[in-house]
Length: 538
Image (cartoon, rainbow, N blue to C red):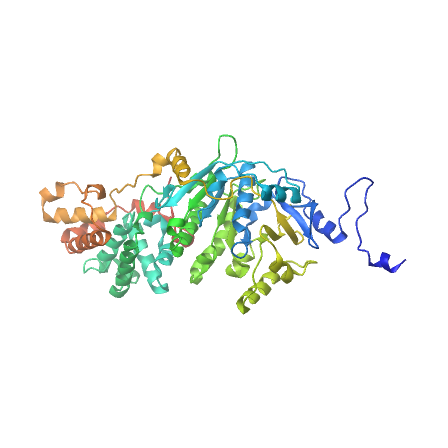
């Protein structure tokens, strides 16, 4: 055998009249993605700088509840990957939830625009590209932005998540948990911030201190920190996120009339400067789903796939209890048919206990300009199975819309690491016009249910009723003013007025009997699970 023959790379046998055979290493990788059941098409294999359209990289539909990670530096194509996966899930009857940080995912509802770039990418990966939009519902936290308002009551949000939002330390978090426990057992519904502020003020009053004496009590200093945090939070315009009607997370499981899954897009540009708030709200949505969904085990396809964007914000400055709850939620929610994909820049943004549960990986390019970048790159490489690629070199050389992929096979084993040129989304790669977005929201069947905020009687109103009762029968008979009946005033003035009322009420002898006589039946119906969120009877 000649030297030239010896140096020639081994290839698979080539059938007469067939396309050129794949190099043997590429063939071994491609065989790991030859699934027999329903799967999502991600793109074509990259090998030695060439795109090999005969080697298609896919992910089985049935393993998408095994969770995943989409990572990569800014501008490498993560958002388009989310869009590509979301529209294929929708087409196969799986609802999807996506948080839209930058405001450019609304295009999933509209057909894409053909151009030379799209046509070129489709030809490279052998994709039969055709423009198409997908059924979508648009939401906005508290109604700030274009979307149906998403609100949560303070009661269901729970003390652990609320402590994360307010930036409380461990001691303050424990005290807040004690306050929630008292409100639960006394049937004092905490709907919005003024309800919580009223209960805190009572529990630090002369009459209220005895209520918690046997279970630790609440120090005046800690209560002051909590009250100041609530006032500052409200002063930033955040009070709109808490209240009623509370969002039913079952809406995220909606199907379109044609059998496609609905893509739920939570618009976040209006609150992108409040990362602690929106990242914690996303965790509330996930925890609430965990509470309500029944066990299904391993199904043919997931009931919902939840993309958790900017995931590193969730883990920043998180307490051990908070991280433990995240780990447990991710571990257990799989059996309820929900897949969770964390979206961030590098795998090191995700704690190892969580990362170990993410079986499906799409890693876009990383940058290595600084020593910290180089450490992150080396750490990322160590999280992948052994492969024939030089991953450090590959990950810094990937282009936009290219990624390193490894997923779980239909048998649950990791597939070979595959450098992949990804397909182009069929929907619009960019935002739809604001006017079109508003029309979609107004015409949604959910708009009437959630658009208008409601302020019904709860803990705060019970306190004000007690004050009126203390003043005499005439005052007690006067109907409580609702928020809509009050003269407009700035948030600072509103908070000051409410705090003044609370101080007056907790000083009245009438309140003591009211607080002790409120029915505990509601409290018995409130059970708190992971994160201290409340299970609600729907």
